[in-house]
Structures are given as C-alpha cells and as structure tokens.
Image (cartoon, rainbow, N blue to C red):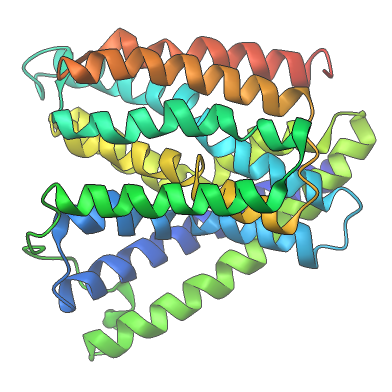
Length: 328
C-alpha cells in the first residue's frame, strides 16, 4: 500500500512538472504562429492542458496492462468535469475571498462575459447525455454525435470573436539552455509529452493496485485521484486570475476543459471502450449537472458570487467520504 501511495505522489509530481512545461511551450508557439488570443484561451489551451488526462486515458486503456485499465480510463473522463465543478471552482471561490480581504479585489462577486453562457449550456445538455449509451447502446452513433457537438461548439465560439492576436508570451523555460526560442519550444513540447506519458503510467498502475487492496472501485478511485493530479495547471491559473480580479479568464480557464470532457473525450471513449459505467459515473454527472445549472444562472446575469463557486465543495466532500470511507 505504501509503495502504491508513494508512486501516486511521484506520478503527480511528474505530471505536474510535465504539464507546466507543456503549457509554457504551447503558449509560446501559439504566440509565434500568431494565433487568436481568445481562441487559444477558450479552445486550444484547454485542448492541450487536458492532455495529461487524455494520456492517462490512453495509457490506462491500451498500454497499462492493468485489468481495471478501462475503468480507470473512463473514470478519468468523468472525473475532470466533476473535479472542476466541485474542488476547482470551490478553490477559486476561496481565492476570491482571500483576494478581497487582502485588497487585491474590489468585491466578492466575479464579473464575467456573457459569452460564457455557451459553454455552460453545452455542458448542461451534453454531459448528462453521456449516460444514455450505457443503457441503450449505439456507441458508434453517440460517439460521432459528441464529436460533432464539440466541432459545432468550436465553430460557434470562433464566430463570437476569437480572433485577436496574443500580445506576448513567456519564452520557453528550456531557452535558458537553448538560445533558439522556436527550436527550444518544440524540444520542450516533445519532452513534456514524454514526461506526461511516464507520469501517467505511474498513476494508472498505482490506482489499480490501491483499488484492489482496499476493495474500492477503480473507476471511483480514479475519478478522485487522477483529476486531482492532472487538473493542477489549469486550477492554479484560475486561482491566480480570480485572486487578481481577472474574472472571465479565471472561469473560462476551467469551463473550456469541462466542455472537452462533456463532448470530445466521451466521443473518443465511446469509440474505443465498452463504456460500462457504475454509480460513480452517475454521481459525477449529477453533481456536475447541478453545479453547472447553478453557475449558468449566475453567468446569464454576468455576476457569480464567491459562495456560488464554493457550493461545489459540498459535492466533492460528500463523494470523497462515500468512496474513501464507506467504499461505495
């Protein structure tokens, strides 16, 4: 047990470092190739910052050799939206509170752009729909449908004005060793992917081992542990932005990945797995759906109170107790 726990922490550290390197490199390369700033923030950046979870999914399903690899992979897909809705948003709410009392913010309400109604509406409809194939089949149909929904979302968000260029970006960290920034960015990107694969492999095998020892569903355990490790980069960014009062950036940095995990990645999962779900997936969808509806109401008014974000913490604590204490 101790060795598995140590491997989980080691895998988390590796994934965290790899994700930081990856995000830094992709932001710089996006700047070099003059991509639209909002488009990168709302569409491209979530696609790449979610790569740690996707690599965990690929490793679990195809390369881990673990008997419960498919369960872990599916748990990763259902874990990210739940983690963002519960723990990540809750931490952002706390960050707003701290920023206000340290006079870094003017109030306790996040003022956000109304365009965020689009991703929240997509999540509220699409994520509950991921349960339907588990009961009725038609995996190929639903897999293609989810991919088309995501494509439509990208087009719609792009038409909403995702075209202004990125003003500047931090140079790749590796450029302290390699003077050529473009070459350094590409090398750093490749190195980050290799580290992501290695760290993900450690996480998958460790989660599989612990689930067997304590008798907890691998899907349920993966739903808590893996997103907690791989969602660190985007959560940290959201915390900093909310603390400083850059509210739309803070909320958008998390909502973008929730859309991915409500459409694109379930589409992939339906095409390559048996998509057998259990009570943990149902709880993830229920919690995410309720929180998303609540925040959708606030976003429509373009004002989100700090306590609205913190409400998700109740779901995270409740689910964690059920899994870790009662072994649901």
